[in-house]
Amino acid sequence: MKEIPQISEAEYEVMKVVWENEPISTPEVVEIVSKKVDWKPNTIQTMLSRLVKKKALQTRKSGRVFIYTSLIEEHEYVGQKSKLFLKQFFDGALNSMVLNFIENEQLSKEDISELRKILSERDMKEGKK
Image 1 (tube, rainbow, N blue to C red):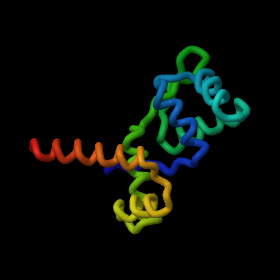
Image 2: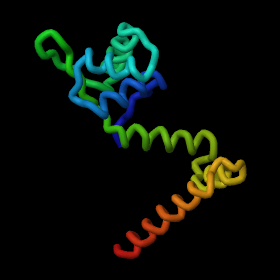
Image 3: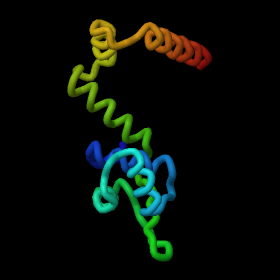
Image 4: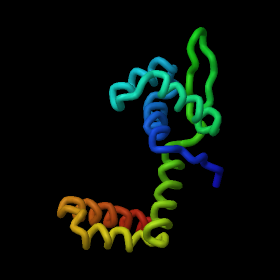
């Protein structure tokens, strides 16, 4: 598994914009992020620079602007963060996490129904293998 850099919550907001729109220029990132979060353009540019230094993004110059593309896939990052969350709070046990949500009434009937549907579909796929 490839090394995934540590990304702060703020940097993650910038990464989501890049993932959704790459390749994307600095002005485009600033415009989109500014609509979601009340940050100054310099703050967003600092986040972009940090993400390049962390090797989460790569950049190339096109005319007078920088163009960003990701060096890590969103699903890789989310997968790693999910595993770390499970390990940190539930000793890596997914069933403990789901049980916690159910017992604390954080899952609605619709959520539970959706989980049943997902599990049923997974069972059907597994049966075809």
